[in-house]
Length: 153
Image (cartoon, rainbow, N blue to C red; front, top):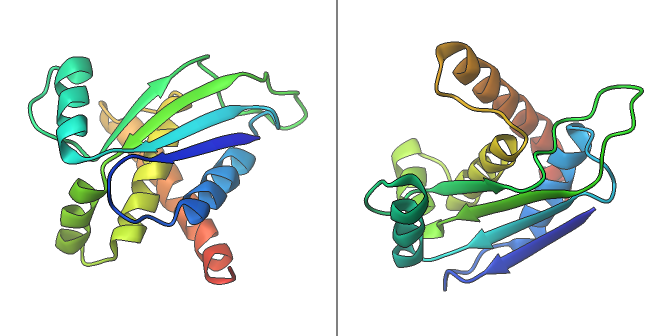
């Protein structure tokens, strides 16, 4: 699996840990071993520009996902297709504010947002109540399964 982390945000972030988390999620979702993912961390100005350009929404947001080859989670016993999963764009400054509101660390928030972005790349959404329940349930499960591995660095 190829996971590229590019920190253009000006904020110190544990890129190695984000890469480990991304690999964990891609493994759990049964993606092809040659699937490619890019995670880019940007500052608020850049995120606001992306948010307006791609979502027609003002101001910076926490995470954006740009799927490429529309890969989907693999199924037990089937060979998943290889390809480019896409790009997840994170904004550490927005994540920091949200982390304070949620009462956890910025690193925890960035990891939550990374999982959220990867699930969007895999076709999950949360516009409808059923979709919301499925996506956020899966997100919580993945983060819960990741926690013991994270602590065992």
